Length: 151
Image (cartoon, rainbow, N blue to C red):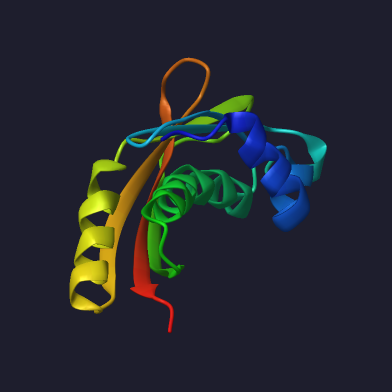
């Protein structure tokens, strides 16, 4: 079951206000893929007149985490989630509108099933790729999510 992008943008306003004020928005979400965007503006720039790396990280993390949130909700179980590790590569200055896409939603369902069946925490690596308006990759983020049943 997919949630509406507008629902996540409201969620962001109330629970991740720094991401919302920097312009991070969910544009598309289903169980397999999430697309987020953020536009280079004065409020989110670095001294080099491009988007600050942490703002790109917020948009990239939301593109992975939104699917984790959805699938945990769909499981009907109380499951915690947390980023355990991450890494990133920056290949071009991020200016203009940057679109982050994660297509690793298929990894989440199996991890949730395993944690419910075994009671043991699970980890999954998810990748989000940021591209500019010309389709050129500006950054790639990887997030290691850990999920476990709440006591």
